[in-house]
Amino acid sequence: PPSNSQSCPPLRMAAALQAIGPLDGRYRNRLQSVADHFSEYAYIKHRVEVEIEYFIALISMNPPLPQLASVKPEEKIVSKLRAVYLNFTEEDALWVKQTEFKGGAPGGPPLATNHDVKAVEYLLKWKMTEMSKEAGFEAFAQVKEFIHFGLTSQDINNTCYPLMIQRFIRNVYVPKCAEILATLDTFARQWADIPLLARTHGQPASPTRMGKELMVFVHRVKSQLEALDSVPHCAKFGGATGNLNAHTVAFPDRDWVAFCNKLIDGLGLQRYQCTTQIEHYDNMAGLFDACRRINTILIDLCRDIWTYISQGLFKQKTKAGEIGSSAMPHKVNPIDFENAEGNFGIASAVFDHLSQKLPISRLQRDLTDSTVTRNIGIPFGHCVVALDSLQKGLGKLLLDEAAIRRDVNNHWEVTAEAIQTVLRREQVDGAYELLKEETRGAAVTEESVAKFVEKLKTHDTIKLSASVIAELGAITPENYVGVFNKAEQSLEEWAAAKLSAKQVDSVKEAMAKQRKVLAADAAAK
Image (tube, rainbow, N blue to C red; front, side):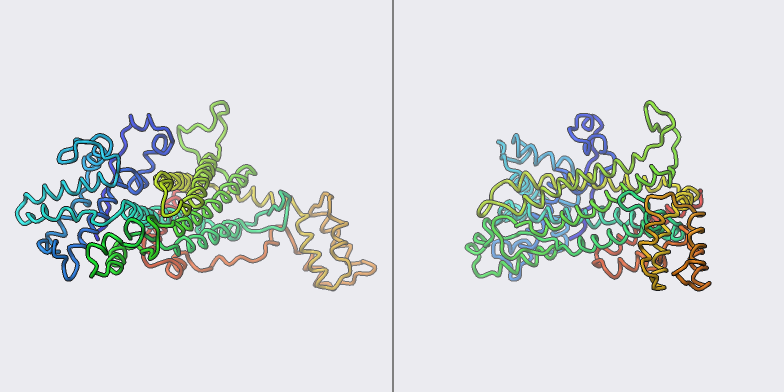
């Protein structure tokens, strides 16, 4: 079916002021893409889409069901039906909510249904009645009872949610992650030769490179995006208890399993073959866990960048009019990384509950999944806030190369590992212990290291060649940085090789977009 791409109506400012949570209040103007996929409006619209596509599949059966033979699956019929969800309006959604909670909507039942999916069914039956008044669509009035024919609510809901999630993941979430990757990858290659004093347990350790440390996060996120991309998006579509009872009793001569498989496949999903009344959510739980792992990695990144800023290794670009502290005018706080960390954390907490709770349901079904699934958009909303804040923070970074080199060169004790390793290569007995005695807890400077190497020339028991002495004397904190291949596989090559065909284009587009932003920023600097 065609893309269900019409935007959710924007939230009014007055409603945002009354919002209980920040997603619908403080952050609402940043989250239209999330609302387009997970708002109540979007949920109703997706339900309408699934109901319509199911009806189209019914009238397209060959041979046709006798009761539906009057409605041919011609282009004008199919287009007319799909227009119901492609042109879905806020008024349509309000019709559904009125029918659910109050009743009395035009053409609807006089009393409240207190059932959301039944309200959608009534909307479509009313639409069918109205369309039957038009020339060429008269038969719609006679076949409207085949709307929601043989289905249970969860056939609709458990097809909507994976559809909503799949579209969001492919069109919003993964592209935003790809933009972060493009930024980190660009910085990693630009700063590949900048030495960085490593710190393990908070103490100075063998130097590394700023570019390599950022590339670590590129590799970690890539790995988890591959895992996320491998999770199948599955739907449950099998009647009241998963056995297609109603379909089979009504038309026992039809292959309803094949019919449902074809329908769900046409929506771009996979159909669970054996379920209760609801889907078992195992794959969805895997998807939430994959997103949670990405959040964990990016929290780690936020904390590292925050620490580098606090050490003075990065500065941050300022913006006219912005205030860092209400009391201390000089401050430029790393608020974007702090905001990202906080929102990633909230998202992960909700993802954790979703992945633990949803696969559990009493017997053939209880209603706990219904209220929980309505919160699926919440962690994705916090993820979007976090990803945008992280991207904004990365865009403000100014590498202070002088400060970084000064930090490295203030810690000559880190050359001890290099020196003792060369001595061990030369089979010097007790090389580690010798360097430990000279360096542990002592103030090690360039001069003291040079003096130690000089002593080796005339050592009583250690006999080294002039070339080895020269080799030891050439070791500095800045050049003891190991290897890092900045010419490794490009992100675009990785995406083409590792991601599914349906995801690659959006990832490449997001990366290209972000690289243009970075190039423009570099030119401005």
